[in-house]
Image (cartoon, rainbow, N blue to C red):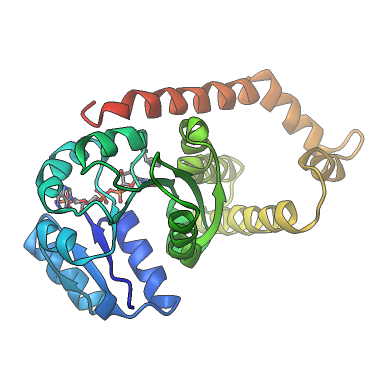
Length: 270
Ligand SMILES: NC(=O)C1=CN([C@@H]2O[C@H](COP(=O)(O)OP(=O)(O)OC[C@H]3O[C@@H](n4cnc5c(N)ncnc54)[C@H](OP(=O)(O)O)[C@@H]3O)[C@@H](O)[C@H]2O)C=CC1
Ligand SMILES: O=C(O)[C@@H]1CCC=N1
C-alpha cells in the first residue's frame, strides 16, 4: 500500500524535506503539504507539483504527518488537528524544544510520536537529523522516520533526553559556521582583500576542512596541529583566539541554545 506523507506548515525546513523526498524518489502524488497563506500554497504547488490541502484534510488522508511549524505555533496547529488524527497515524515533530509528551497529551491515546531535530543543510542533502521515539513509537515508526529524513542527509537515533543538547549542536550548528565565515571575511577585508575574494578563500577553506573532518579519520586536534607550524603564523592566531575566550564563548553559546530549547518545551514561549 502506498504511504502518504503530509508536511504541515511547509516553511524552510518543511520545503527542504519535501524537495529532498521528491529527489529521493517519492512521488509528489503521495505527498501532501499545508501552508498558512494561499500564496505560499501556490508557490509549493508550482515548485514541487504537490497539491496543497488543509491541515484537517492532511490529518484525515496521510499515514504520516510531519509537523514543521515554529514551536510557538504548535499548540494552535495541534488544537486544529487533534479531532481529525486517527490514533494509528505516525506524527513526527520537527520543532525545537517541544517534547513528544506535549503531542501525546493532545492527540488520541496511543498515537505514535517521533521527535526529530534536523538542520538547514537539508537543502543540499547534507542534513544531520536526530531522531527520538515517543512513548508509543515502535522500531517500525523510527525506521520510517529514518527513511524520510535519510532523503536529506544523515540520521542518528538518540534518547529524547539528549534532544535539547542536539538542537544546540547540530540544529543551530550551521548558524555558527556561517557566523564564523562572516567574521573571517570581515577579517580578510581588514587585511586588505576584496570582499568577494575573502569570501571565496574562506568558503573553500571551510569546505576543505569539513571534508577532512569527515573523511580523514583524524582527531580535530591533530588536524589543527598539522596546520600549526613552530613559530609560524597559525599559532599567533590561535593565541589570540584563546586570549579572547573563543572556546569558552562557544561552550557558553551552546549552553544558552540548549537552555532556550528547554524553555520552548511548552510550545508557547515567545
Ligand atoms: N530553521 C532551522 O534551521 C531549523 C528549524 N527547525 C524547526 O523547524 C520548524 C520550522 O522552522 P522553519 O522552517 O525555520 O520555520 P518557517 O517559519 O520557515 O516555517 C514554518 C511554516 O509553518 C507555517 N505555519 C504556521 N502555522 C501554520 C498552520 N497552523 N498551518 C499551516 N502552516 C502553518 C508558517 O506560515 P507563514 O509563512 O505564514 O509564517 C511557515 O511557512 C520549527 O519548529 C523549528 O524549531 C529545526 C531545525 C532547524
Ligand atoms: O533557532 C531555532 O530555534 C531553530 C531550531 C534549530 C535551528 N533553528
